[in-house]
Length: 155
Image (cartoon, rainbow, N blue to C red; front, side, top):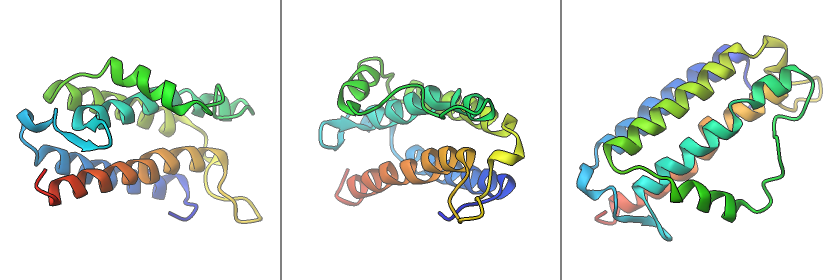
């Protein structure tokens, strides 16, 4: 998604969230432990997204303080994802956890001042826009594609 002002980004994220959640809800609870992609089941997909939402929610306060949105280097994403997966919930609890994490991230984003949204004079996304759209629209879309593929393949 192109750079967007704060209101447009939030509206797009709300729509993507509802659409993603509806897709997940179309799956019976007893199928959440089935493999979706690689070694991840639907519970793992939700835990992964929830973990990133929680990890990066404080990024908006860091951006507003003139710091990087990211508290650490995530070069070893596999180890980080393994820690998240080890604490995953199952079925309805996994979806509830995803919902709570999304809303924490969403609230942090809404509290970030307007000046950190949109794009700069060179057309690059400003930090809050980049963080928000990167996680709510782009990252979530990657997982949506995996889930849709799994469902289309008989999953």
